[in-house]
Image 1 (cartoon, rainbow, N blue to C red):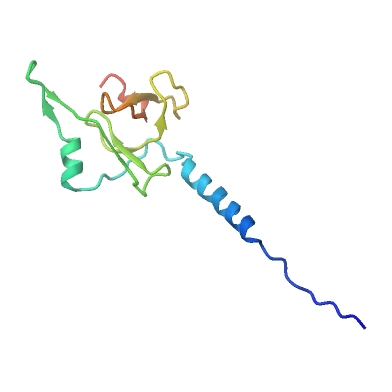
Image 2 (image 1 turned 120 degrees about the horizontal axis):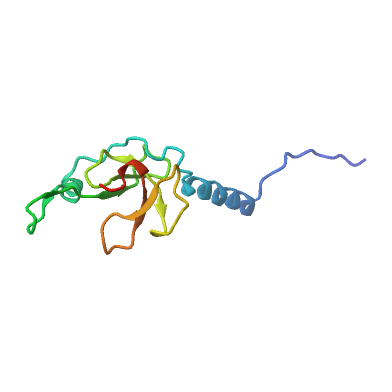
Length: 128
């Protein structure tokens, strides 16, 4: 007489690996549902130096700096930015001035000129 044993289905290692990749991809895509909400920049010397205001030597006027800090857990896309002295806000990456994919009618700007790194900026900050 033959007996059958019932085994529970197992996820094979390759299937588990692919499932993990899918989960990481979804997490990394950072939907940006919280775009524009306030966030907190770390309080350290590097961030203070990058986000400080400077005085334009030709006009003698104060210029507000823009800065971006990545790996901020408060934000869905893990990016917190300050645009020309604004309050810090959650943002997402974009591809350049002609990119129209920014949420909520925002615009795409290069925060630090010459770096080639573009991020979405809240529309109410345009013209700052």
